Length: 167
Image 1 (cartoon, rainbow, N blue to C red):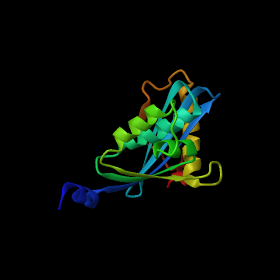
Image 2 (cartoon, helix red, strand yellow):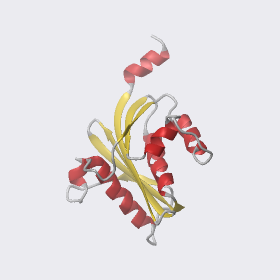
Image 3 (cartoon, rainbow, N blue to C red):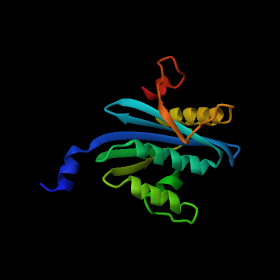
Image 4 (spheres, one colour):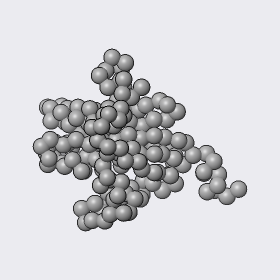
C-alpha cells in the first residue's frame, strides 16, 4: 500500500459550516465556522476592524481549514458562491488570487469539497453561523475587539440562543 492509499484510509471526516458578516460593507467584519468532528461541534470566530463581507466569507472558510489535521476529509457548507467558485478554480480574479493560493497551501493532503446553501433560508447551521458571525462583528466593533484574526474554539452552552441550531 502506498502513502496516498494509506492516507485515504485514515482520513478523518469533518463537516464545516461558515459565514461572514460586515456592516457597513466595507466596515467592521466578523466570521464564524462550526466544525463537526464525530457529531461534536467546535465553533471558531474571528474578525477584522476594516474589512468586507466577501473577505469575511473567505476567512471563515480558510480559518476552518487551518484547524483540520493533515489527512482530513471535509465538506464545507457556505452561502457564498464567490468563495466556492474561487476556491475550486472556476473563477479567477486579481483580488481573490491570494485566497486561492492560501487555500491551495492549506488543502495539501486534505480532501475538501464544497456545498452551497442558500442564505437566510431556514438552513439551521447556516443560520447559526450567520448569528455567530454577526455576534463576532458586533464584538469586534466593541472596545475589546479581536486581538488576532482567529479566536476559538468557543464553548456554547445549552441555554445559548444558537444551541438549538448547532446541536
